Length: 289
Ligand code: IPD
Ligand code: CA
Ligand code: CA
Ligand code: CA
Image 1: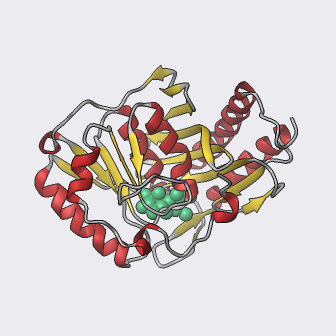
Image 2: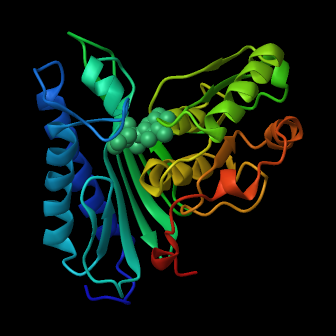
């Protein structure tokens, strides 16, 4: 298939499944094994597995679609800048957990057509030492969301008081971090609890699975969110920015919920400054509405 031609969804899904299976294989082979850790920041880890998983995924995508644009956390941008297709890859989401053999890490891949996710897969590693397993979430626009082949739906809980939430904190202890500490306090006080697991893609898939009612985080990157937001929407959930505005993968904040609770969550979240929503990164070159 060439650029600017709509590739049939079944071809995209075939490539997506093969690519995510490769990423899964690389991460599974490395889990619990000795690993080399590097630092992007004081607590921002990267292992050799992050890079290896990305290369394995890239090889599959390149085989099928040599001219599609690819944006990976470790390798940056490659491919034809004029492509309407953008593959957005987090080869290992939750690197800190992976490095500690603590469950909750994932391989996350999304296919964007003109800036919007149209197909997505997240492979979640569950269990722990001596009993690792995976759950694979797949979604396509208008096609529903599936986990290990079963169609999934968000929960129908309609009271914050009976809801469970999950959030995340970025590596930098900045204004966004401090703001979220306050939100963590507030929601812990009014709900059944707020979890903090450490892999944004997994957290959002748990909303899609219906085991938590909502997730929010500031300062995420496109590869953290691109796949899981589609999975949540296709499971019947809602995705906006933290100020309730229309979400775009190139924004930096996200609020996802089962939909029913969305307004109630927004009511309790003070409107974030523009700086908290979009800061530091200009992804606009890859966003072609
Ligand atoms: C991180 C995880 C974490 C979130 C961070 C992300 P990484 O991704 O998703 O949950 O809090 O903001 O950077 O670096 O492990 O791929
Ligand atoms: Ca990282
Ligand atoms: Ca990530
Ligand atoms: Ca990562």
